[in-house]
Length: 206
Image: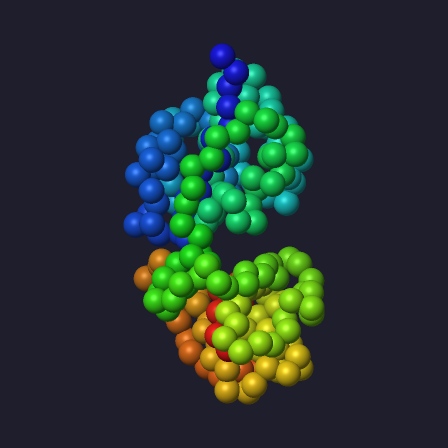
């Protein structure tokens, strides 16, 4: 029988948001791959582990070598289908099973008690902005994955330059699912000129 890679979504961070099937899969893994943070948070002392760092090729080689003899469990933050290591795995392997997880984007909209089926979701985490996607229209919803370059202040400034009204609401959702979780509500004008929030989810409602 061909061995497989099981990609497990571990949610936004807190174990409270880890699906039972995901926890069971991690607990019984013989080979476990993930970020240093995830390996520390969801420990399995019996598993052979490898931390995913900037050396993506090293992680892929480790997975390929161990896949010869057993299944490999790969932990990714949030949901595997939303900007995760799954894309790189799909380019190299075919024997993949996915266990979904709760994404930080999903949790942000849940915290705001808003549906997100009609939202435009944009990742600016390590990516450049596509100004064409920021066009204003009444009632539009935007959800952003941010980083240290594209912050709440940067995004607000970009939207204002693209003719969004100053009084449109922006929500900066930080540390979702953790004890220090924070959701700050501002207008675009306020967000552009106040303290900026980095590496968070920013939701804008026109």
